[in-house]
Structure formats: C-alpha cells, structure tokens
Length: 314
Ligand code: ADP
Ligand code: MG
Image 1 (tube, protein in one colour):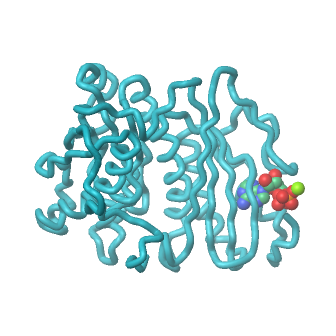
Image 2 (tube, helix red, strand yellow):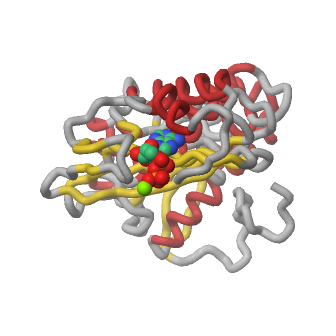
C-alpha cells in the first residue's frame, strides 16, 4: 500500500525494523519486498491459518510497553497454532501507527523477533498505515494431513487437562499487580511444543484466551458434550493465591482470560501415552475434570470474555 503518510518513508521503516525479522526459512521462496510472499508448504501437509488483532484501549492500555506488545501480538497467534497441534512457520504483520516513533518500533520489533526466532517463525510480509495504534498478525503453520487437533472430537468420559496455572495473566492485567503475575500477562508462553506432542493423544483441544471456564465450554459444545469441572483440582499458582486469596484466586483461574494455556481432553486409554509424551519437565499439566454426555443447561454461566456481550464494557 502506498501513502502511509509517515515523515520517515514506509520503505525505510520496513527495512530498518521488519526486513529479515525472525527465523530464516528455506521454505520462504520470496519474503518481504515484493507485492506478496511466496511460500512452499511441505507435501503431505495442511496449512493452518489464523489472525488476531490487538487494539489500543481494548487489548492494551495507551503507553503499554512496546516490547511486550510485540511479544503478545505474535504469542496470541502462536497459541492458536498450538491449539491445532500445528507447527508455526510464516507471519504477516499489519501495523497502524499514529506516527513513526523509532524507539517504539525498535522495541516492538525486538519483542516480536525474539519470540519469532524461538519458534522458527519468519516474518514474510505485512502492511503499514497511519492511524490509531492497532496491531494485526496473521500466522501460518502446517500439520501433517489429517492430524490437526480440533475443538470437536472429545468423547464422553474423557479427562480434561489444562497447562500451566490459569488466572495469573488475568490478575497480572490489573494495575499494581505483583511483578510475577504482570509478567504472565505481558509475556504469555504459547504452548507450541505441547500442542504438537498432543497429536494422536488429545481427542480435542482449545487455547484459553477468553477464560478457562468459557473456553472449556466451547470445546465441550463443539464435541456435543458438557464439561464437568472439579474446582478442587484447579491449579492455582502461589502468586495468585498470595494476591487474591483462595476464593477470588479460583474465580480468576476460571474467568481471568489471556492465559494462552491449552485445555484439552484425553481418553482413558491414552493416559499413559500422555504422561510419556509430556513429562512434567516439559510443562505442568493438570487434570481438572472430565466431559460427559449431555449439553450445558441453556443460559449456563460461562463467565469468560465476550467482546460482543451486551453488558460488557471491555
Ligand atoms: P503493496 O503496496 O504492494 O501492498 P507495500 O509497499 O505495502 O506493498 O509493502 C512492501 C513490502 O513490504 C511487501 O512485501 C509487504 O509485505 C512488506 N511490508 C509492509 N509492511 C510491513 C510490515 N509492517 N512488516 C513486515 N513487512 C511489511
Ligand atoms: Mg502491491
């Protein structure tokens, strides 16, 4: 797109901050610089595609740390790719900026690049425009044909698991939160290796962005089942307990959102395979209940985050 309208040329901004960002991949036939990127997916694989937008005032506050924003903009997409059991590969970045602030751009690109390199992701294109601050990242990945995890596929009686300690990020979003909690909000850890290890083991999977209870309900609904959560099994971090006390910490673990953990189901026959594929050294996983026949009662409380719910201000 021409006419982005920055004092510094659009071309210079892209060259300085975004060209050659992330991993160098042999399957990028043509990256940044032409009208579009050329990518070569591996034979026998399915492309997995996702996009997410962060808008100032809605997903982050004015003045938010740009390094964290660069991390989060990619992390939320990596989390979706992880939930499909896929391997991330190529990202596109659409940025709307009020001005070309070099320090902001450098920090944003730095946060994005560090996570991209960690996961072997190449930035292959994007767009720049002048306007209110907004960040959209599209991420493409791949999975061997027919092996992707889905929200549907859970069977009655399957156990439900969650990675990590949900609720930390939700509490970390609040002003004045303890440093350890704030870090979980600003630098979520997308569970990419866990998602890949769950192929052939999990019967269904979803990533927790809106809140554990709401997202588990989505998985159960997609599988035409109902979720049976055992509150006493919820993994609640010591930091969250310290900050909120037992009752509010548990509520936050169920509803906080922005955890970017994985919630998944495993049939009884694959429990041993699960423990072998995911030793505790890789990632903490906790059984939190099961899914059962039947559907959730209409109007059942699903207190997660819904952008279009009539009575929510966020
Ligand atoms: P066009 O006008 O054909 O859409 P642009 O001049 O907007 O192309 O972009 C030139 C090249 O720079 C393209 O390869 C595009 O994908 C890439 N690009 C533009 N903005 C970004 C960005 N924010 N991050 C990464 N690549 C970008
Ligand atoms: Mg063009």
